[in-house]
Image (tube, rainbow, N blue to C red; front, side, top):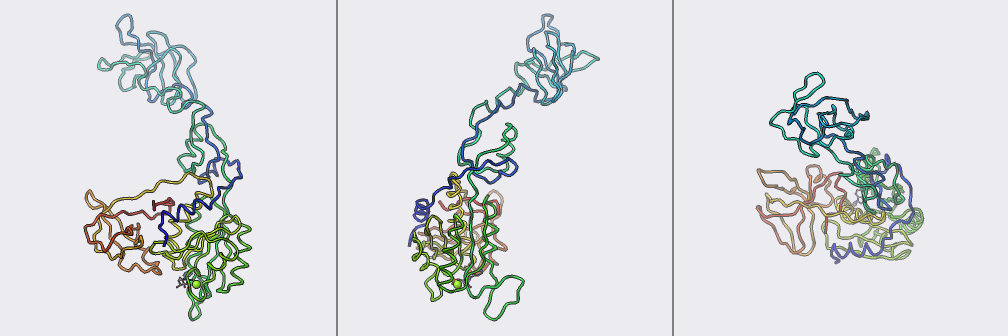
Length: 409
Ligand code: AMP
Ligand code: MG
């Protein structure tokens, strides 16, 4: 059995990032991967401006020692004052407005007394050079790197790029991901189940998980347990997509045709991972299409997706690998585990005073999607661990539809 880390390394060796570049408008760029670094086209902020509502003036001590200034104009956001503020003068200024020439500090309106067209600064207030001013380029200077190549753009990046005046970015083409489920027993939700049938949940689970990436999904439907049909359909599909996922048919049963087909028309890179749930995972290359034969048990399908397919999508998109995000929590129940495979158990995480606590779902059967109904995390039980007792400290990974990051290593 291959360790998860070795399997991820081997995955890295077979995936080639997409070479094609597309110019993508900012409004549709969230989730896309930057093909090049983005440099700031302007200084940010583009001019010295006020951080507060108040009065713009120069910090030099007035000859008279007076703290009374004549208001000579007004600078509002988008409407700069075009005059020059001389000694003994000030301009009314509002948040975000351009600092007038001659001024180098802003006194808050609460710290002055205004009388007609003069203000008197409170004696408690010291006027300091630069106070309440956002200086030009203090956030980023023109030409500096805003974001790195390989960055997956999130909602926050988009706003930041817009603030800098970026209208479009060059991104990798969206990967095309194809999906099949396999199994004679599968039926569509909404249809009546005949004896021996179950509803196909894996294909829709995978679609939901994948759609959090910027990808194109091709739903190829279901495959019967028939080697020739499986071969022909997989062969055909791999010519259309960058990454093909199947679920089921990947063990060593009589009707498990997926792995033999990959070996026949492509190259199997690895199979059998020291992972629970999700041991029988077949990964390989069919021509230049990356192939994943995910296990059929629905919980195994999801866990192997989170661990491996997420990483593959990142690699194909040319993205920098995301950092693992794990939390440490105290287990509230005993947990059964045998040494050998790393296990991910569904659990509920909550904050208990200052500590995070986690309780695992009782029945961890890999067929039981019910376990996800209550779970908000996966508890990671290391390969080397035996049974764990309540009070043990464990690593957990949050389950949320925004948790499309790699969390195994
Ligand atoms: P298999 O690996 O094909 O033997 O499947 C293992 C288990 O997962 C069997 O109980 C299958 O009926 C079930 N299974 C396979 N594919 C799906 C699917 N798409 N949706 C729900 N259950 C499935
Ligand atoms: Mg099957």
